[in-house]
Length: 550
Image 1: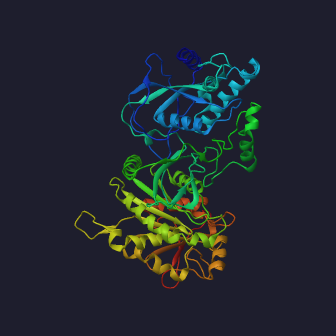
Image 2: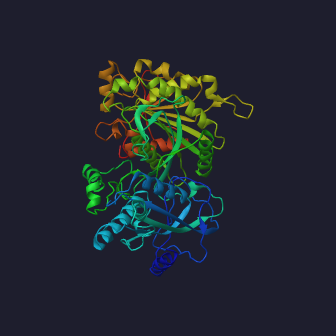
Image 3: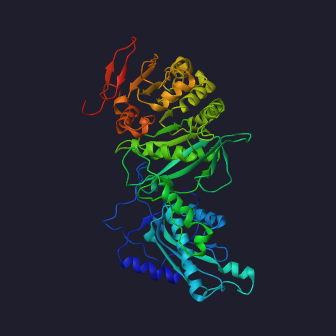
């Protein structure tokens, strides 16, 4: 296999291919053997270096060659990856998270049952199946060489069932370069991969897929809060403020090509998500202990310009996937040349049967209790300079319960300068808060009394809040219509004029103008500096965010 690596790698070098960095899954200690004779190709001038928009690149570091080997196994006559095979591939991706991949060779094999032609075709299909899975994890296809050897290279006696099972495999060899500077993984993330830290009270499904790792049910463990991190691929071919995902046909095609019938027909599985145009997970869900969570978050904050973290909490009818994609999108779209944020999310089980709005309301108090605990974990991280909170829709009510749980004295911290205590969190952003207007001032009072900066983005053309108003028999705090709710200590911004999307309930994330205003808000610009228009009303007043041409 090593001779094959040298031959294939040599052909790549002659072709002038650039070294490509794998999307990271975690930052484990170095694993793998050193392979000295293999040269490292120089990057091609035509290929931009892989940078993470959400994280800056650290200074250049020394490196060492590394190689990894792994085998995956298949059922008889099948090329569909089993769950144990996927777990092995996930582990390989995790172990090579800090490796700049030069080449992956996948060689498929078959047992001796069947004709030579059949086994050759099946072995190729198995190699292509592994390649497709690795591509879905973010590895560029042109870095993976796949071929089949049929039944020509058994590793055990094909006369026994056990021996045949060992021969039904794909052998993988990975060659690359690892930085030896001790540089944190977050600084080497490929462009478009966003590392999202999470806390959740969702129950675990027992499945490895990040799309199904957490359910819509509440955890029933003694401590419901699970901490961790997940990687999200933000595709390059998309409009800002959008979250494109695979269409219905692509999802069905993936299911069909991954079936046992498709495997029998030697059809290569097709991934529904196109990494160039669709949001997708770039690796498995990673659970972290509280200590590891704080250490990883501290490293990410130290690398981000401004040492700023944004904690996002979603509203009704959002899955874990929905929340992760939204958090990554907002963090990615908030970033500019001199401003970056470390994205953190709290995901609560807000989506019972997707349409059960009342059922989600029963979970608000418990979610608030654990959100308070989650905020406390984040506040323990010393190297974060600023922590902002963005609470959307029903998530704003979860936030108010959390603030009440924390209590005002604990929302203030010593300034360290001998002056009065300062607010623990820098900016609290309420986006279309689904809170009863009559209760809003009371519920948000802990933030006001602890001198937090609170900004409420409201709109009159928010269809979801109109429905909530009808369902709850009362105006909502995020509605800027006749029941506009103005509270001393809360800066209110009406974004109706730039709330373009149908339904208009997520303008904080899907309106470029609102995103740009939030960026400037988090950077410290006041409303006048941001060019907002003042409107006087009820001796308090509010601001209008208008399109650029008005």
